[in-house]
Structure formats: C-alpha cells, structure tokens
Image (cartoon, rainbow, N blue to C red; front, top):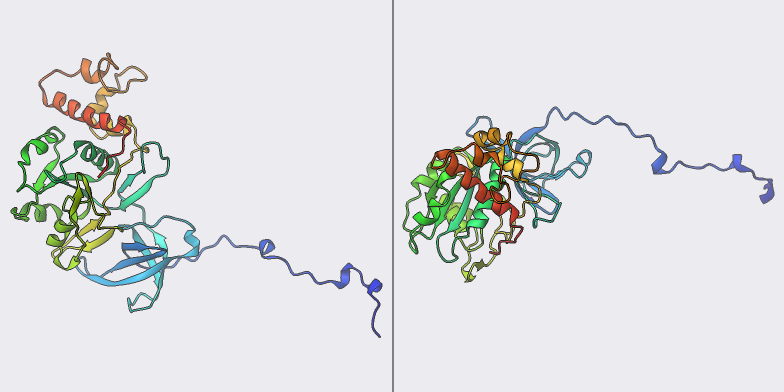
Length: 340
C-alpha cells in the first residue's frame, strides 16, 4: 500500500555527503620510479622535459608533461630539475606527469618594474648568465647591463658580458666600464670567431639575456646551428622586433646547454636591496659592518660616514671595486624602465 506524503520523516531520506565532506588523506605517492630530467620548454600548461640518459654525456628522450595535481600551483620553469612518471617514451601524443621538483641551485629573477612585488623567474639552475649587448645599432645601455649584473650576482649566477656588432664600433670603451667588477668579456661580432664564447659555455648551463635586436638569436644559431631561432632587424633606435617569446633550453653540440630567453623591455629589481648586492662582495660586506645604522652605502654627501669611504684608501683595487659596486647600487635605485 502506498504511503501518504505526510507519513514520511527525516529517517526515510538518504542524503549523500557532498565532495567537501569526504575525508582526504595527507599521504602522497612517493613515485620511487620517477625519471629525472631538465625542463627545456614551457608553454600553456605543458612542459618539455629532456630526460637523463644512461651516462653523464647521454640524453634520454624528451617528453611532454603536465604538472601533477599534488604539486598544486608550484612554479615549474625552464632549467628546473624535475621527476616525471607515466609515459616517458617521448612518443608523439603521449603525456607524462611532473611529480617532483628538485631544489634550485640558482634563480634568475626579475620584476616588471621596480614597484611590482611579483617576481618572475626567468631561468632556474643556470650557472652562468651571458649578457648580450650590441656596441652599436642599438647603442649599448650600461644601465640594463648593470641591472642584469645585479640579478646574476644575487641569483648565484656567474655573469659574462658578450658584445656583438663589433664591426660597427670599438667594443673596448664599453667593456672597460665593467673591468673593476672582474666580469669576463667576450666578443661575438659577425667578423669574430666564437672560440672564446665556446670556451665560456662548454659544459655549463648558460642563460642568455639581452635587448631585442642585439643579435642574441643570431648568436644562438651560431652556437647551435640546428636551433633555427627566429631573428629580426632592428626597427628603430634601441627597439627591435621581439623574435623570441618563450625561454627554451638548447643542447650544445659538445656538452652543456644554452637557455635562450625572450627579449625584454625592462628588468625590474623590486626583490633586490642594497645589502643583497653588497653581500656578494665579501671584502666590501665586511667593511659595511662598521657603517652607521641606516647607511645606504651611496657615499657622501648622502652617507658621509659610510665605512666604504672611511676605511678604504683611494687608488686601490678595493676602492675601484667600491666605485663599480656603487654604480650597480645607483642603477638599482634609479627605478626606471630600460626600453629596448
């Protein structure tokens, strides 16, 4: 016999728990069978990972991978060392999962400008930064190079200055501006051999950074002929067509990697302060312990009692390095966008 509607009570209703009430475990799979490699490309939620080979000089397949759910929103960047599971054959239309991210040894960071609190990781785990600058067309800008040097120093990368278009102007005056920082300088003009550049990058992971139009992609194509990086002519003074839009790691013919980064219009350093720069130079950092509180290390008249002046004799290598580092601090304080 059918029951009337008013004869039902709450005990007759089965309520399924919503998703939000289901118990969740904090245990995560250990993925002991994960294969490791280096992230070589990044594009819209997919990463290319060059897996390690059976020996130090060998490479395994390059797989396309997505970020596993357990990593959440963890940033995965070109140069990162990651562990992947799933289909690691590298065959077309297969997809693996990134499940582990190794601790980074270095990070090249920048912000959009000096007021932007959001840090953008340009490259992870590079041990060198090749700062590519043209000596003409477009003219070199010491401010951008100084800011790139700061980012390299505080990010634990060794900076190297690479000057292009040396057939158009003498590179020595511009190179001399950075001599007291002990920054290595190499030349890569169209008439220059690349032996010195090869010696610098061989066996290393080297990130390249520079204005659009300075010949960075041309240099990459000379170092890695099969790279086929797009190049473009300079369309105005200091401005060029942005021919690289994504960072990509390219294997060098011998050993090592080149990471080509997009041409950028500004290099913000909102994440860097003066103390971080000074700390890179141990001899200067030790002297600043005698500075009065609040000293910016800019020197007189702003800081008349700065220990970098009161405890350093003029005409010494330390004094010259102090002056060179103060140029970096001036570039850090300038708070301008270096248009390219």
